[in-house]
Amino acid sequence: MRPGLFTLFLLHSCLHGGQGDLREDLTLLKTELALRLYKDTAAPRNGTNVVISPAGVSLPLEILQFGAQGDTGRQLARALGYAVHDQRVKEFLRTVYATLPNSGQGTKMELACTLFVQAGTPLSPCFVEHISRWANSSVEPAHLSEPNSTGSQANEWASRKIKGDDAGGPTWEHGSSGGGAFAQLALVSTMSFQSTWRQRFSSTDTQLLPFTGTQGLVLQVPMMYQMAEVNYGQFQDRAGHQVRVLELPYLGSSVSLLLVLPRDKDTPLSLIEPHLTASILHIWTSSLRRARMDVFLPRFRIQNHFNLKSILNSWGVTDLFDPLKANLKGISGQDGFYVSEAIHKAKIEVSEEGTNTSTATALLLLKRSRIPFFKADRPFFFFLREPDTGFVFSIGRVSNPLD
Image (cartoon, rainbow, N blue to C red; front, side, top):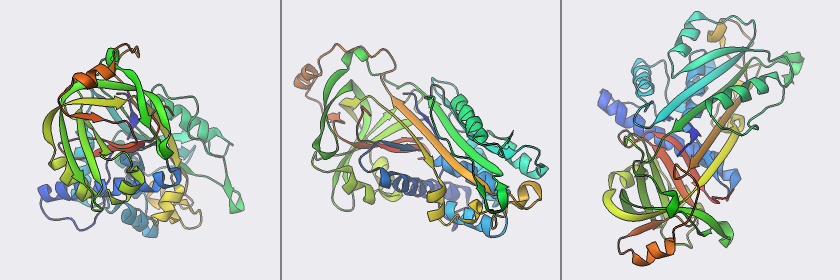
């Protein structure tokens, strides 16, 4: 698997006293906010593939909290549900960012954020120090007053972070607001993740098999196969829809891919999606049991980019983008700063980790197999997560593996 993605969503201000309670609260609550982010981004893309990362959104908002004051700071804290100025939260997040799965045991992960600042603008040493200690983040000068220059810089930066990206990507037009004021800040965040399966799919077992997409469209897609020891369970949501949940670990078992598939072929994801909550996901994942199964999973590759302004506005973060209301005085001690754009980019690719040659017959495997099987031959949800903590690195859905 080779995703380029992003982690860490929290939602709550009523935190308990001990570190253990804090960890539990934030783990559950960041999942709830991750689901909220997913639903807000997926809703207008009905029936399409989606991948988005909670961390790629929360990280720049955390950084801006270090420079935000007044209503701007309060809006950011309400949107995330926590304030990085809280010493317990700050220490907890620093620990989490420092201990994210990193290079080793076949896994490479990097979470990063760059804040582009108008060249020549003085910055507060305190603000720069906060950024330098926050999840591999940095400040880079940019010529935001020149049309399209920031978009080029951001695209180049994102391409360096997400290797193998297409030449396109998120861009935004240069714009000015009333009075000829030019944009002052632009944020781009990414998380890259590369790993191999703990038990690899063999490319010789991959074969074209039917996948029933949205509106009953049947596609022939490359379907990977393995017989493996997995974590598995069958559950129902609060509306009574039956689902099958399977967890595939990566090498080192520090990260896994959680798949949620409707049990009945005539149950669309759109009926299950509204009932996904942090508490129900916690129940499902806590109740998974080891099982030996035939696993069929289509290869898929998804790349999305989002301009997050409308989503953040709907979350009550409005002053940040308003040149007349934004209060980011903590960044440089000067008035006039506001955010021009908030761009999020995600990419995930799931494959056998090898050549794409396909020679074996999966029909034979199905006929001879007497053990249970999990066959993702219709739209499903996925969560790239850390099983021990429940942290969600990315979340999405596969509606068409060929898109």
